[in-house]
Length: 148
Image (cartoon, rainbow, N blue to C red):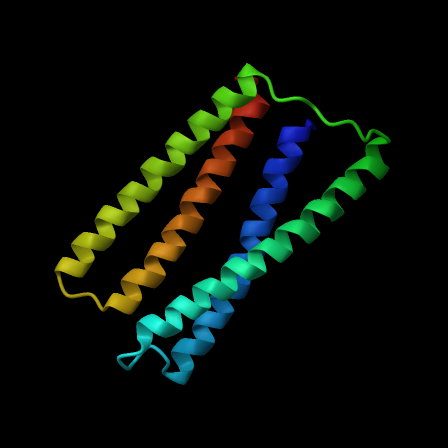
């Protein structure tokens, strides 16, 4: 497994961990009625800030653990330099992720035009970013595995 593939897998694992924790947190917020009043946007904003801070911590921890485990298993601690192929794969992944998020965003705007609550649209946008980043990571991983 190459250095880039290991980073993509770390990125996917981190995203899943963070969004799982965020889902439980949002579910608790819904159960407590935090999104029912006029301060729903404030509650969602603080939840998003907590998610961002938590994702930074989880990313650091998971990255360190994956790199240590990989170095122990493979007995190789070298770091590969990014070449032209890596940059092209990153661009294709970003393009796929951007298109995915754009589709979700347009869908959210249409949903809001038909009267969806703003809290649902905001939370849906957060999940759309997560789904787009997961699709981006999977696209990059497939391209690396195929040899692009």
